[in-house]
Length: 265
Ligand SMILES: NC(=O)c1ccc[n+]([C@@H]2O[C@H](COP(=O)([O-])OP(=O)(O)OC[C@H]3O[C@@H](n4cnc5c(N)ncnc54)[C@H](O)[C@@H]3O)[C@@H](O)[C@H]2O)c1
Image (tube, rainbow, N blue to C red):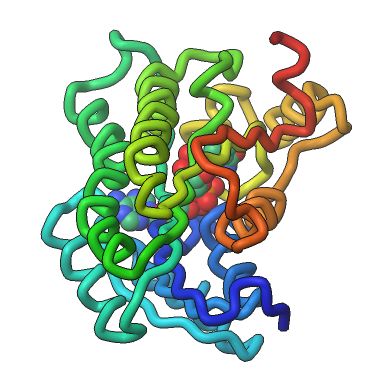
């Protein structure tokens, strides 16, 4: 067990995974715990969050869980209260939750658009609304928002709500970083590239490529470093941004993409 996050409490949204294996949020929650943090893992899916928690417990880590829809104001308020009741403080907010809905404006229904924006963007507003006052009272904190290279580059297919939402995440991050810097609250965003996580094996992404095998082949072929990254590439970066090792870093967009965006810069 490492000690880079010893004595820190980390609040994670979307700490489960949509399928078997390691999503970004699940890997980050596990890695935070492996570095000595007390992890408050929240997810809309009770089984998914319990799966993450059982892994952390089996490794001797400290974790509490709650079922929370990160897009719902009351649900987030309750989750933050439950975290405070369990651990008494919040040092790190890891805003991981996010969904993807490929398509353009003519493909997506208004309900799909609103739901994605609520999960990908409003969720960050809601967690910050409740956790910033706690961090302010404590004298500081670190917020990590998970964006995507889709915020700055094309994914090669239309994904308008996702790209727009992740662009909003970047702008949201800059605003918090600037305005809460004087309170010693840092806010950074991670832009994962093409990652091989359970999320992309869901029908709505594989459909774009025709099959899972074809998706993996095409995505790997695009990466200068040879293949897609995984949840732990994101998790290791998140540990750094959560820790005091990054105490002079705020407002950045940390790209984790095996070099893929270098090709179209
Ligand atoms: N996988 C990739 O290739 C990739 C690339 C770039 C960015 N990202 C971003 O990484 C983040 C996490 O992706 P992942 O691969 O870990 O996804 P994932 O879907 O495997 O895990 C996220 C978890 O979020 C939960 N969730 C969904 N809606 C929720 C809600 N309303 N409230 C609370 N929890 C909810 C799911 O139940 C799931 O357990 C997202 O923001 C995604 O946009 C992923």
